Amino acid sequence: MSNESGEIQRLRRTIEQLSDQMIRSKEQEERILTEFSDMNNELVTLQRLLAKNNNSLEAARQQAVDAGDSKIAFIAGISHDFRTPLNGILGMAEMLKLSPLSEEQENSVSVIQDATKLLLKLIEDLLDLSKLEAGQMRLELGEVDLQETINYIIRLLEPQVRKNGNQLSIDCDPRISTLLEGDSTRITQILINLIQNANKFTSEGTVRIRVALMKDDEITQMIRFEVEDTGIGISEEDQNQLFQPYVQTERGRSSEYGGTGLGLSICKSLVTLMEGQIGVDSQEGEGSTFWFELTLGKKDGNQSVASAQGHQGQDMDDEAPSVSVLLADDNVINRQLVMLQLKKLGITQVDAVVNGEEAIAAFLSKKYSLILMDYMMPVMDGLEATRKIRSIEMDEMRHTTPIIAMTGNVMQGEKDKCMEAGMNDFIGKPFTLEILSKMIEKWQQSSEPTEVLNMSIVHEIAELNTDGDRTLLGMLLDMYRTDTPGKIEVLRRHIVSGDHVAATEVAHDLKSGSLSLGIRYLSTLFAQIEQFAKEGQSREAEPLLDALLPAYQAACAALQRVSKD
Image (tube, rainbow, N blue to C red; front, top):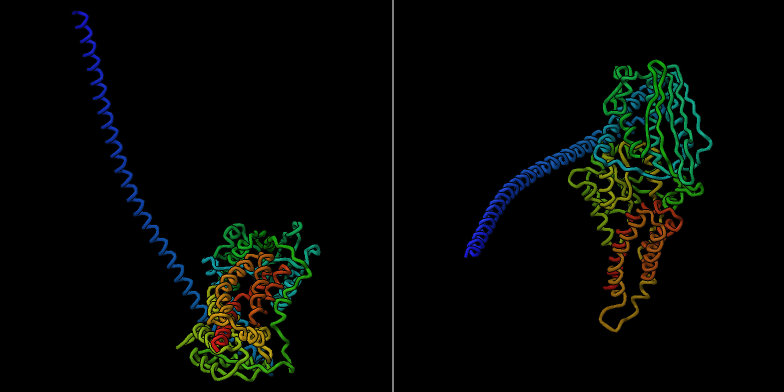
């Protein structure tokens, strides 16, 4: 009995211990649940705060984007408004200087030109800075002939250098390749800026340009450019602040030298964009040496961009075909200027209108060799007028008339809008007689326009009957419409990416398919693109891409009419 009592007591103690453990476990579980609940509440609170902060950040980001867009739009508008009258001033001064003048009158015209060019330089600096800040500055890679670039700069700047009593000397490393690949325009812009700076702060001294080969391998060369002067020099304190927007040295801020302090900042941004380095070595009172280093690709010396435009350009002389021009510009000064410039080039068949609606009416009443279309005009702007003209050409199976945009807004986004509207090229205000002449040479058309269709082939197809109700031509046209737009887009991607082999194959396929349907003009475009790609010059084919879609639409419209008839 005592054993049973002892066993019962042991069981009772065991049960009590288990109960106690269960109670403690339950209490621990409740504590954990409470802590988890608290943590979950804190997490929810943090999520709410994070969502609120994200909304605030997104609002701030959007506000910054909107402010940036507004700034770009404002700069673009200001640029156009300034460049339009500047075009009139510079152009008229150029025309005036070509007429008989006394020495005093020539000096007065020179002062007008110098002052206007200075104002234009300030506007261009502001525009470049805005494009760089907005990330809209794009490199235009192509051939770089450094010797030709240096020679051009010397011709341009030597009169200014000598006027300041300075001597200009050049030292170019003969080991540098004749032709390199890079952005020749930006390299020229940087050098001109640095040389003008050197000349501005030097009097009765020397400005020396050195171009040296630093590294050389199979595909690239690293080039160092130096512009050395014997001028006033720069203190160490001022050197630390250079290459920042609107920053000038203490002496540079004086009215004696002038300027905005944007030039070096733009140079640094352009060099950085080209993945190079820029710097300065100077001592106050002992001159300065500004330098920058760029790695440029080597290019086959036998290749030439001349072949890319050989089919477009013609020499303009007394033997050239007659050229008729439609000029659309709402600014009376610019209309008068361009008409004088055209007359100077021997082009007298010019009709002038003041808005897009008048341009369309003139286009409908007369055939023109070329249309010069202002971008911004009242009633109807140049973009809308161009779209309507392209639509008329397609509906009436007309040959495409070259349309050249004229505007003071030279930002890349505006150029893209012009091309998307159907314009062929772009000329920024202000432009000189030489620039206008080259543009007209480039787009001057022969007396016999290219045919959209080869009608003998089209008629052969049209005469073949099918077993059904539809004609063979109609069926082939539907198949062509289904496949071609997608292939054109694939071709565009291959050309832009530089995939020469793939571009050659797609261009050949499109050319063959077009020829089989009697599509003449479009097939010649595909053939030209195929040849460029085959030669490894896909970049030279890029200007032809914008002509593909209008030519395709015109061909389809023409075939549709023949099919119905």
